[in-house]
Amino acid sequence: MISLADWQRQFQQGVLYRQPPTALAGTATVSAGRRFEVYAGAYRLRLTEALKANYPVLHQALGDEQFDRLALAYLEAHPSVSSNIRWFGDRLDDFVRLHDELLSHPALADLIRLEWALCCAFDAPDRKILDGTHVAQIPAGSWPELVFELHPSVHLITLHWGVETLWHTTKAAHEEQQEPVPAPHLTLVWRQQLHTHFRSLDNSEATLLLELSQGGCFARICELAADLSHDEATPLAVGLLQRWLQDQLLTGCRFPAEGVSFP
Amino acid sequence: MINGYGLGLRTDHYAEFVEQKPQLDWLEIISENYLVPGGKPLHFLDRIRADYPMVMHGVSLSIGSVDPLDFVYLKQIKSLAQRVEPGWISDHLCWTGVDHTNLHDLLPLPYTEETLRHLTRRISRVQEFLGRRILLENVSSYVLCAQDEMSEWEFVSELAARADCFLLLDVNNVYVSARNHGFNPHDYIDALPGNRVRQIHLAGHQDNGELVIDTHDHPIRDEVYELYAHTLRKLGPIPTMIERDDHIPPLQELLAELEQVRQTAAAAIGLARKMEVA
Ligand SMILES: [Fe+2]
Image (cartoon, rainbow over all chains, first blue to last red; front, side, top):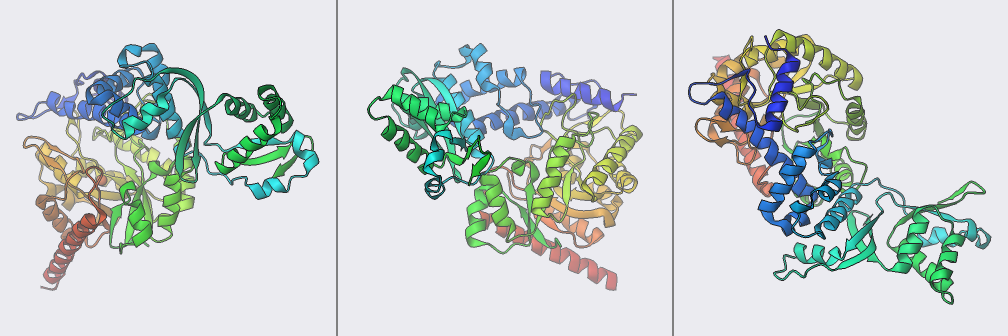
């Protein structure tokens, strides 16, 4: 008599390694093995589809055959442990670092990082947005101490290739793909209302936004701005802050010393 | 109060539900699609819920697994239910994985006394935790355990009584399993405790001859309409919906298909009433 636990372990092993378990009932017309294959096949198909849903541009860039090879290798190394299939593929970035032979171009590792960040931004928590009117109410004397909070959808990712162009041309299904060029930089990924966005940052914006994301106060951001642009430090810091407000990257600010928060 | 005929809410149709508010009795949501922190899914859920009654249908409860119940997941379900105020919460009579792996499939259980006991205990704990009775759905299957001690319909009926839960009857799944295992689907329907069947699923499948696959990517087939009519003649009117998960057609097409369901039901119930009078 097979126990329920043994049935499940044997069945699962069977699906994972494509080996029908022994305790199956077949019929004269359809063998147990062929019946079991419905589950083993559907498993691979379903998880591959789930990975495609999270990495649509990578799928397009690789094409069906190569994407499927990557998906099956990943699935073998990292079967899903989440109750929600939506998170399948969360370790693809790490996985391809060890298996770059599965990618046709090293820049595609960056594409993976970009698509996963977009995926996380898509359904990140909702927050109230800090807008210009809130900021206008902040007393001038409080500015140096001010610490800003980023929207939870904001991701700053380090990329080594200019994959943003690749993303756009692949998505638009352009015939002529330009080879991505090596270009280490920081890319900002975020959600504005219901729509996800990304853009690569120049050195000034990258430096200041990174500092802000790490909890640096406004005075510290201005110091860094002065290092970057001695004469134009204030316009640089203020200009970027305005842009971040417009992009709805900021959800609030606080004065740590006084324990006060805005809004 | 959920009555009449519904559809599964799919992202393809979000905009139409928001802008055109087509006439429909209720919607079923896949709970997992909304177990996310924020953004589009929850935005549209709230907007559409304002206009339509809803029921919640999960795929990850894994009620039959020998792994411990996932109370993190159950807490998420409970808080989603506070947001949605669903007519009821359902999941499947299956397991989805063991040893913390999730195969994301609705896998078959051995129909044995041991499984009955295991399920009864777990359903009770879930119902206690959620503070309500749940509906469990029969899944389609392609293999059976060589050591089954009873038929699927005996198993399902006994379980519903012991665990004091409700049933979501997927008529297409009964048809698919009947074909795959060579039983008479009427035997299945006729054995069910009618008072426990609270919802019906209808869907399309793929007939490969020897094996029938539950694909949810086609319109409902005539054989399933017939079995549906038989079900209603036996059990009386039950809230019914169409499940479509792949090759999702325009909403108008699904609404037209639902009209056909409604007519099938009206004819079947009318006929059953006439037979009662006679
Ligand atoms: Fe179903």
